[in-house]
Length: 465
Image (cartoon, rainbow, N blue to C red; front, side, top):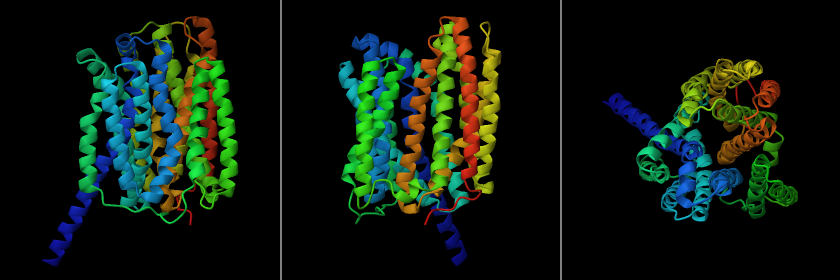
């Protein structure tokens, strides 16, 4: 009788943890979905709201800058006040902002609502990661859980353009935002039922108020600078760059004086933590850079429709979603180093096919790069998150998740801006092809650098004391 009762209780705990994991996966899925789903709706938004390119850039960039700027503070705040409450607040803010986006009467209210959406995402992302790592404390079970999280969230990449296109064609552009509302409502209810209450690990430590203000200015300013430079807005880029430098300098001074700095010095001196987050940045830089120039090649250079180009880019997105759980199982069994090294090597080899893209039918030459990078990302994505979370003390899980996601957001912004600036428009086929070949070598070098950084990651991740 006792054994039966114990077994039933254990099964109940497993089911409860599984339900909690499914609910928390919705957070990252929504955040990534709102990165990709909005792009296909931009022409319709422009027509409906009477706004030109600057307004449409604000719709995309306001979300990205807010996420990148606030992730670090969101993670650190969750470590102090508790991740369950902050994750609920993030979902609520994200849902309310989604409703405001769907009801926006003009471009300015839409951009403002997108910024608030980004703020909500910055609260829920590190919190959801911290809750998962707390629920699955063992190295192997944690890696498998993060594999499920990464796999489900990665489906947003191919789903975004397809779902967005279907909604825009059938119901109108406002529904790409309104579709978030019922998902958020279900997630909030799920967290209330399945996620236990949590307390912050640093509730008695003084909050680094200066760091909480200056870090978003520095990080958001950096992303703003990169985006403005990629759009060719030199004046804005200079202004944003000056703000970034000033905020970063003030942050460095404030952190040296803080009793409890936003980012503990031990983390900044840990090779494993720095190395794995550098890999995350390089992965997103190379992947999103190649994705951006591939889109230009297919749509501008070869005059493919948006739907056709999106379908032709699926070989990059699908392996990422399929292999993320595989990466979790490999990380659970062998540690993060093996999938990180294998993924970087496969992506580096695939990127060399960019050197074969010519001015004629280019897709057969482009396909190996898309597949190689997609497979490489799929092998890396779970391992890089698991290694970052294991390289930080458990009390700083939210901060570790914030740093890792910040590194990826900065990498994404850098990739689009740098690759876009180097490649230029694809209207001049010969010039674009020559620059694409140069970017092929750059991409290979980025993946080679990521492979070299794998040496800083322990074979078996152990938390810092």
